[in-house]
Amino acid sequence: MDEEGSFISHLVELRTRLIRIITVLVVGFIPCAYFARELYTLLAQPLLEKLPQGGQMIATDVATPFFVPMKVAMMMAFVLTLPHTLYQIWAFVAPGLYMHEKRLALPLVIGSSLLFFAGMAFAYFAALPAVFEFITYFAPEGVAVMTDIGKYLSFVLSMFLAFGVTFEVPVFVIVLVRTGAITIAKLKEIRPYVIVGAFVIAAIFTPPDVISQFMLAVPLCLLYELGIIIAALLMKDHSNDDPPQTPEKTTDTVSHHQEPPTHHP
Image 1 (tube, one colour):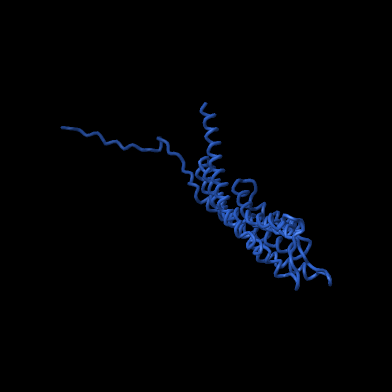
Image 2: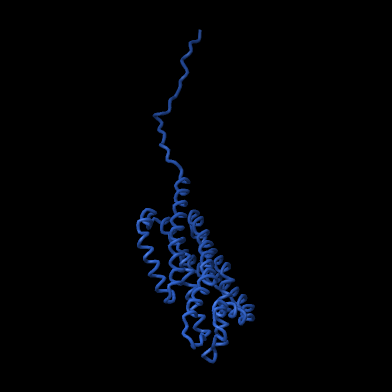
C-alpha cells in the first residue's frame, strides 16, 4: 500500500512539473509570436547577407508565411524558457539522488545547457555565414538564388542540432569516465579513431562542402581533448577527497599502566 501511494505521489509530482513547464512555455511563446516576423528575419540574416544582388527568399506553400515564423517563435520560446524547464526536471529528480550524485549532476546539467547554446551560437555566427558564402559563390551565371523559407528553417535547425550536440562531447566524456565505463588511458588510445569518426559525422550531418565539414569536425576533436583534460582533473580531485584508510586498533596494542603496590606501615 505504501509503495502504491509513493508511486501515485510521484505521478502527481510529475504532472505538476509538466504543467509548470508547459505554462511557462506558453507564456514565453506569446511575446515571441508577436515578434515572429522579426525573429525569422534575424534567423535568416546569415543567408540574406550572402545573397547576390536581387536575391531573395520565397514561400512555395500557401500557409508557409504564417507557420514558419510561428515555428521560429516556438523555438525561441523553448530556448528562453529552457532554464526553467531544466530547473523543474532537476527539482523532480534531485530528491532521489545521493549527495555525490547531486554534486555531479547539477554542474553537468548547467554545463551541458551552456555548451549547447555555445554550439548554436557558433553555428549562427561562424558556420552558417561561411557555408552560405561558399554555396552562393559557386552559383552558376544566370541562376537566381531563391531559397524557400520552410526549407531554410529545416536546414538551420539541423545545423543548430548538429553543432549543439557536438559541443556536448566534453559532458559525454566526463560522464563515461566518472561512471567507470571507460578510462582516460583508453580515451587517449582511441584518439585516432575519434578523429576519423569526427570527419565521418561531419560529412553526414553537414552540407556537402568542405568548409562546414571542417567547422564541425575540428571543434569536435578539440572538445574531445577538453573533455579528457577536465575528466582527468575531476578524477584527481575525487581521489584526493577519498579519506585515507587507517588500520583498526586492537585492544592488544593498548598498554595499561598499573600503579605499583604501596605498603602502608
